[in-house]
Length: 194
Image 1 (cartoon, rainbow, N blue to C red):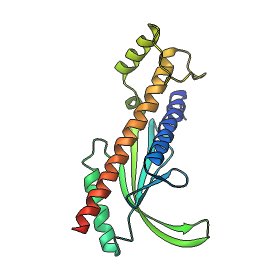
Image 2: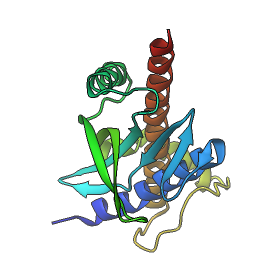
Image 3: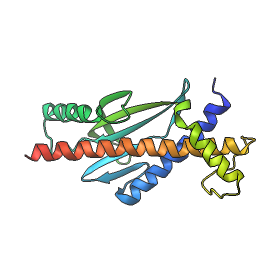
Image 4: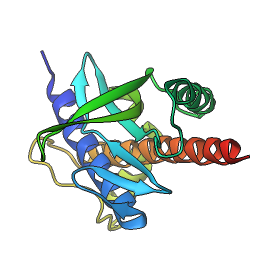
């Protein structure tokens, strides 16, 4: 059973990820839904889910099959991405190569290979006590912080600051992860070109 804390954190984690998607779509080429394209590779950031005291989300990138033709080359590309991403600050819980084979718009089969990374963050890792105290004290001293939400579900200013920190932490961690995947794809594509 989900707790109020988990439900609220998931709501604000979702806001952080949605804000990140909007940022990436404005920085790169926007695509439908939660996707964007950079350097001929499509990326997607999922919505978060709450599962057993953690927030889970996925980041995926299309394997550029116009540059990588054979299944063996695709597997080698995936292994290189996996190796690169494993060195990042935030390591994925799982890394998979996934095939998507249905084009719902034209109702035809359409094969696409993706690198799919699953990240899990424990609820208590989504906020920093010291940052919360610092922001709360600033507000108490009359400072304005327009980024602090006013949730009817929290009864204190501190609760609202925690939710803002959850949103911002989620966005920053996911940005770091997506940039790491972008860097991996870029470097591996350059290495393939020789």
